[in-house]
Length: 132
Image 1 (tube, rainbow, N blue to C red):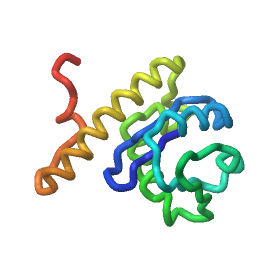
Image 2 (tube, rainbow, N blue to C red):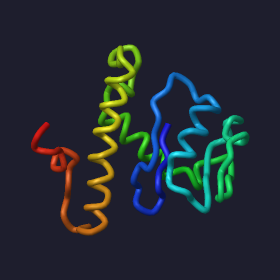
Image 3 (cartoon, rainbow, N blue to C red):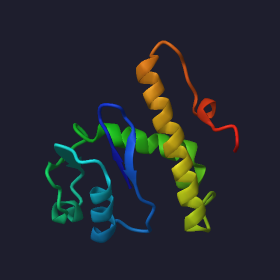
């Protein structure tokens, strides 16, 4: 589960959980930076969450959720363990969380770099810290 800033395309919140429960999603929304507007798909659990001080709008299509859907596709592209359960999967939830944490750091760093320097191409590997 991810929360994405539509302006920067940075991932501002994420959670690795076996299912989208109300408690997990509420903790994700509470920990994320406050927003004026929240958009989601039509999953019923999103309607029961508290979005303060913003306004939540469930969308029947991808007109307002395209950014998070695109970032989720990138996440599945770079982390094979999220792509196909039959071939690559995490046996340990802690390993999955560490992999997602590293991806989110690299992704956000690259997205902010691309905003400052749009003419220069940048790959995720370019932002990998030297000590790793």
